[in-house]
Length: 400
Image (cartoon, rainbow, N blue to C red; front, side, top):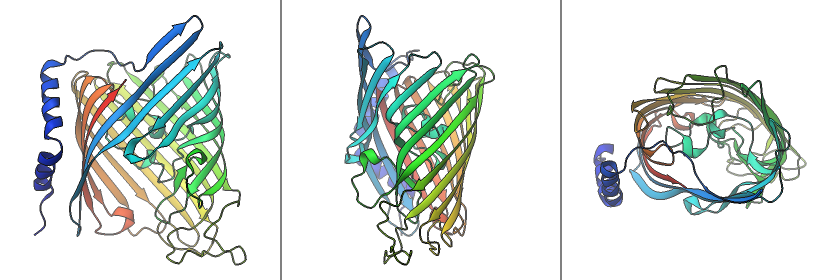
């Protein structure tokens, strides 16, 4: 008989996180809650300055899937040091690299001009202005892992290299971003996986250009891209965004040039021809409550217009994602209970893929030092009926 998830959790914890749990327990007793939420250390010499910082996220992850053995792992989900600085007025540069998940990847890497009030212009690799949840740093998320609407595996662009313009107006009640970038898609019939050319270590990624932008309205004052209500101020935001990506046909590894048909024998990697995306999002903070909601829709076409498999049917798909997540500060700035619901549907799905999450966060110093626990219940994985999985995430975070 297969062990229950609860029994597996007890065994996994006893083998992997008992020491971390002990340390955390000591911390709960002795560490006071404080208001500091700053990260990085800055050194100044007149107009010149230099800043160093980073994040460490140690994560325990357990998966209990139907008809499969329970699995677990302890990893560094993210190890991201960064440096940024300026030697000339109105100019700055930043470089950040990630060593998490036993991989090395460049994240932020850009130069930026800030000489115009209320506006900044960047050249390099940074977040594309789409999906409120994706733009919200992994440091500042309520659930341990992002939902479908913020996951680059399912239509949302990741960091991309190009030209980026951002700014604000009306006393920061309106913010905006516009980008023109080079972007890649890693072909996969089960995903719509955007990646940056900066980290292209594969020779089969589809290449192309992406253009898009967003506008956010904050009626009660600027609501930053960060989850959780630490300040007990009533804030709200409403945003819309859109983008378009087109394959430049330089690298269609899985399509026959003469027939236009897929040549991957297993049909697992169809080349993608074009993608358009649209987002509408909203967020609220106040009275200890934090709520974020987002809806995304993507229209994608494969180079082979006859291909059916995964998310695609007859060479195209309409991929729809939505998520609602929120939390309540049961103990201000210290203990937060969280919950979320997310869903994804595609043209070739039999069922809607859903995930329901519950959890809690304990803050030593707001998002800078915290422990998060999320229990996620998934139904109809990859749109397949009765393919379910429950997951447990425990994450220890330190931002410096």
